[in-house]
Image (cartoon, rainbow, N blue to C red; front, side, top):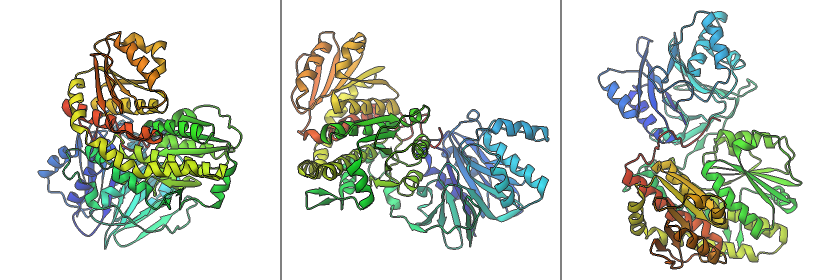
Length: 609
């Protein structure tokens, strides 16, 4: 959600800060700002509502200079979208940017108002700034000591960077509930909430752990862990190429990422298929294999698109491996009293690995007696990976578009490999595993074939872009794909869309059918196709407008538009059929002129509950 960038250097960093927070625009935000300490040890602050470009325009007429500073993109939580609520916030000689939510901010604010503090915003972040100032004024201790004391008074998430105009040689970073990374330079160092912001200046990073506090100077870094002891953290060299985060020939990142999926899936498979027969996960060892041997149930928790991937995996675990599987939205898992099934294994899914609800679910699960836990994630450095007993990386590469595409299909790819691996371990036979290896090997080429249908899909999109409501239907493992198709349309085209299992039509949704509500159906040729055709006929007789994606020609009535797609093997059909729905949502949004990469009110990484 919100984005943080900070730097302490030997040069003017104004342009660097502005360019860096532009690279964090994909996270979702509604305002932005920066603060510098100038040569007179005074704060210079500029803030603006709207895109970072508006902030850049405001800085053009100001002669900004500072060798130390911080910047922020805000996604509103406490207080409306306004310049007053935009970060950074200042209390006398202390300036702060903050990601997260302080749950007891109103109580602390009341206390500080009694002490004479005047608040200029409605944010919980300004509360932190005044609290730090009050504690320092009261105790006269160093800023680090004051921060340690003040943190004990805060409840919630408070990853932040703090700057002191009385000591312009250092920044202090606090990592709690939201990621922070330190970028290492030569005679300069940087802090950000995402390495993408810093790739233009460094490839060497230190990922702070939960509870860490770092003192960052231009020549030196000192890190303290949650026990207030000096901590050594590994320096990790990023393999992300800076040019990979550019759009290249594509108009939007989402379009680029849709077309990257054959390559992303190949990356997910790389070094994991042995002799074209077996699945190999280097991340897992004998302990994990022993757990797989004895597990009798799988519980998957996720949010959004990852939840839809989990729903597909449920079909695979139960139909292929004969293992019962429950799937739950993370926010629901964390909000109820839980009963854990016998010999249950806990799995989390997340693109970013920073999803607040999923992280909370993982932490709760560790107290409930599961056999163990595993996360499937795209980011090795993420909190979810660091806190999980085991992990499998999807290797999708950097995904900038808020609406997940390649993250979804690589999650499904890894999940199907996991199903194959568990079948092999539990049943001591690899016929199903061989079959899965075979179909996954050809999957990237199957996707390349469907991507060539882009013009035909664009023509369908032209017929749908004025629709107010759209229904998506799917049967069995295509139902979660219908859910994902509907979500994509809501996210980027702002069209109300709902997904239903085909068999549920007569249980309510059929009342909605008329000539004004288009129905989109994915209908691969399998044992359930004849049942799906009956549902199609029910819609036709009621005048519904139907758009079908199928590898069989289906033209029962004149009000059907059927796009014949290439044949695909049944096991990988859910992965394959999500591609045309991604393209459909993209082209509808394109025709409507929405901000496809940064849809309103949404963020790439949802780091608050």
